[in-house]
Image (cartoon, rainbow, N blue to C red):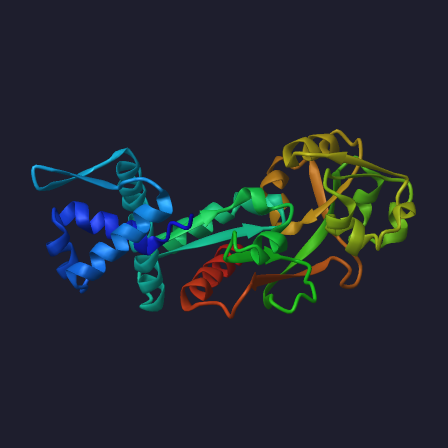
Length: 295
């Protein structure tokens, strides 16, 4: 049995037109050709699709199932064609976006709000569940745009550098490191480093700041939430390394200090990753992100 979309449309049109003759005209077929297709469908199904009652076509049980399914399928197909047309014509569309870093979610909503003010017909969906594997979700077609700080050699992914930020060491003002104006990795040997509880191969600090050398620090403690990390650091139970912009809200209580690395050790480049060259709308959204982070 092979129920095709053409079969479903055939049943749908016959029901809505009320007769084989009118349905044939609607489908630009001859009446014998349509009757032949209907008989072939019934032969494949092994059941009657229509009964004739007082010269009227009445759906059988299986016919009703086919008609109900055709309503859903044809509506979905119409919606699909509409979305494709919108994208082709640069009209209303949806941008599905994710980012590899959970801390970005405190500024991303602001970027979305600013973008929506100027682009009211564009929807932006933040796909939070893709944060742990943004490039995987991208290649699976589950997001349109991923903001990442590490790139891959995947031939299908286009990476566009969009901005730089700085990773800084955050500590209590009671910590011995607070006296420095800039810090070298060698200064961290006696410190407990508190990091996000992420798989090690996805932890930017471990991979790019410590270069996978855990011996740079005395110990490493993993915590899930930003606020919990900050509370531990504030109590001088360890230090952490975060993006400068992400800790700015926490520096207002004057109990914390954020100190840069020596040289350019803490500089990090962010990229917009997409499967194709960014669309005009996606580029406008990227500019809005830049605006939010630079102000």
